[in-house]
Image 1 (cartoon, rainbow, N blue to C red):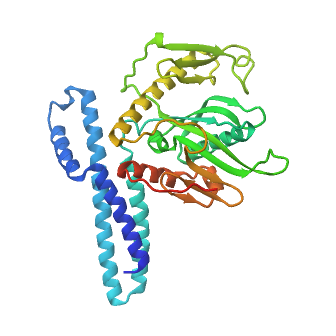
Image 2: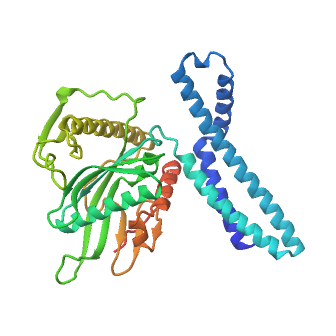
Image 3: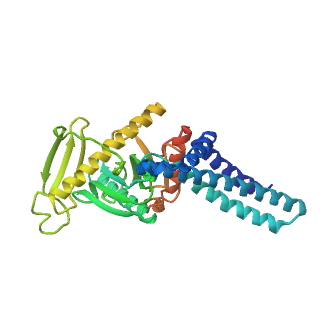
Length: 375
């Protein structure tokens, strides 16, 4: 078999092996049989909520198993046809087989990612919070670039983007901002972006054009739906109101409509100023707080399962998950997975899918990669 064809087969095999591992294949088959039997039980819908949970789990497992079997079947059929074509010297048919394997590999990668989006809140909408690190205008401009990057990524995937809160920098960029991304699997895709992001470039704000390194942090947490109950003790909250900043109508800029809530036991702070009403801003801030507390619980469970700390860190050297170099060369490098791109412009315009897919896969395999940061 041609080397390019074998490479595509290996790619397909790796994707399907990861899906089988994630599903725990034999257990998944037994579980699907159990769920099919429950669906046949006439008493299932006596409890509508439990029935919906059963149907949802059954659909997810059935689709993942069927997709895996279909791809593996098409792979085997295509390889068999290519071997026959090579034996007969039919190069045109071999070329067709390579093209079919390429399309199948792309489908396998897509289905792999979809199978990995099976976490408790992966299907939910998500908040994305961006904070500038130390460094004044440089870091604030970088934070603004990251805000735009996630906005563009969400728009590429047909998601709706709402700006809930923003504190602009004195000269450029932002000190902080909170986005709400609404769309299918928004949290599942974006959750691996939490961490410190590093930028290296010739500063447009330096009169002698020196190279600067800037840092900003990204924090991603899911929107909590009605099926998840988060209890918050009002006595553990400090609620402050202040005047909204930035663009807005006469009312929003002249009343203390913005709301900041501090959860004292965890020191989690959330704020909202995009609504004209203080009441609405308070409600949205409470939603954010519930989401942050829920995400912290998910993260705690994951850390216990993996025995690896993934806690929020300082915004600076030694903590970054990804570096973006614009000068003197062009490179984006993920320091967890080793995935790179030589087109930073495309990445900053929202081309993040391969970084997210690799990080999702790493969460399943638990395999770490020894990656050196770029200068």
